[in-house]
Length: 233
View 1 (cartoon, rainbow, N blue to C red):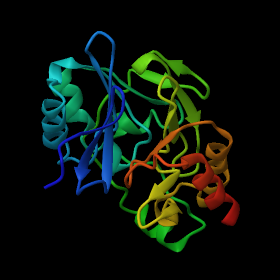
View 2 (view 1 turned 90 degrees about the horizontal axis):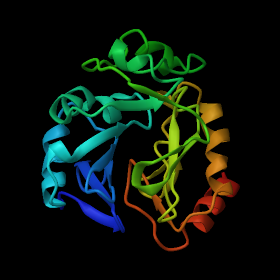
View 3 (view 1 turned 135 degrees about the vertical axis):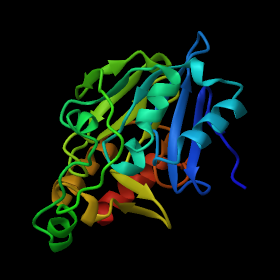
View 4 (view 1 turned 60 degrees about the horizontal axis):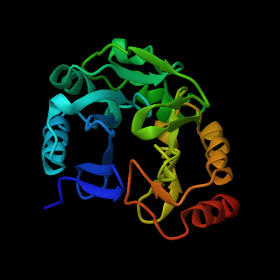
């Protein structure tokens, strides 16, 4: 059985919602004890997120902010329920914000046959409101300083997040750590070529821990490993 939540840096917890780390949400504990939640997984994820919070010694009422890296179903599918349970407002990048109220994933890459085929029946989830639209370079109060890095391509408004106090990077789906480092699956990108290009932004940042929405974190020389991956690719 996966551990419901793992503290990967001071005040930063990884909550696996599928398997041990196949799909991850993250929780930042604020100085006042409140919690910022990053990503809400699939429709089935809220129960696991609640269990993860309990493992941290927290309740759903402690969550006062929900951030989404992007609007795909495995990251936004449980958002409507988590927003209802917690009463917390939802924030996402401005270029993805319209998909939450529509209850659907962003369009796929129509230069790919599978992208065109899958877009005939787009992935849907329960709609929710987006209360705040995030911008590139914005530093949120979450966790004492969470910087928004716009890394579009996987979706128009896909973001990565840099937690400045702990020097921890959440890559979102810009880079996976599943059986090694890899780019996001091209079939599920809005623009796969752009996704590869903007992933290189992550090699230019400074961080001591790399955390992934798909896969376990890297604590030993993460920047060097990501830069080597990007250079090789």
